[in-house]
Image 1 (cartoon, helix red, strand yellow):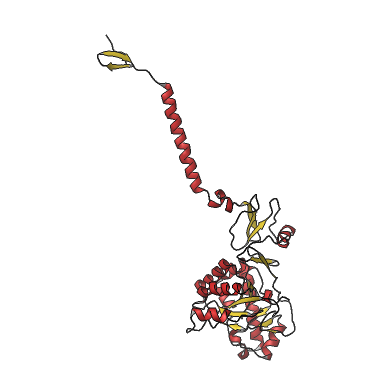
Image 2: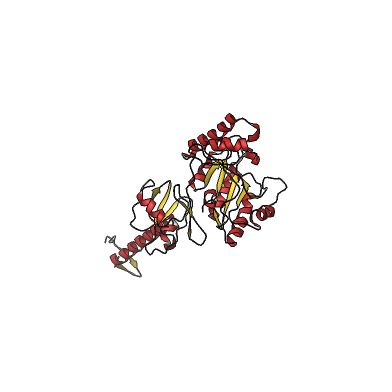
Length: 345
């Protein structure tokens, strides 16, 4: 007798092999569930944290003025960590790719929480409140001679200013710009045109993050030892370098290299549209013998309203001293701002 292929031997006799369709279906369902779970797990790993954490939820992100424009989280209380050119705007607000009406309204409403481009720049303090950074004056024809040593003594504001040299120094300058941005400490950079040509990356970063850019000559010469035409060339070439690299102009401020000036230099500089800017706090951070605590103390001890603090992008310990400088000044009730900010009434 031929054996049925769908049966098997059980004990001493033959029994049919029954296909349990319900068991097979359950097994298939479990496999599908497991596959879906693994897919969801993989997708969760690929999604940026800010999309799954309510505190960092960002919606309606788009480029605006070279940075990101973010709408507030639905409850208006979410936290969005920003850096550089970032904005917080009300939900439903329309943004434009220029400094048009919508962005102007955002600025005027005090909703910026990062650095923005001129003409209305703001930076925010660690407590989340905003401060206004006034627009920088443009270079626009001859002006009266002006030599500035300090800002408004009636307002508790301090301007941190940094001079560049004319050499390549990408690492030190980047470290300073990054640290200032991390601390949300506005500053004014007096740049040499030669430095701009050799360090275009740091210059663009400084402009993108809203720092004020002023002139420190092109090749860092002693201005009392050069003629009027060379003075004009030094300033004009720096203007050209900044504009070609960043698309923006320099503020109408000039700091003579080495602080070297006389009445003639002041007059020529004014005829070119610049105010001459000095300082009233010198950290001497450029000197090889200067150590970090000295930089901190020279910048902050017995601080006064309107102080203009001189530092350098080549200072060996300057980047490391910034956290204490900023912390001490803020603890003393001083608002950190740009040179334009410290000159405001």
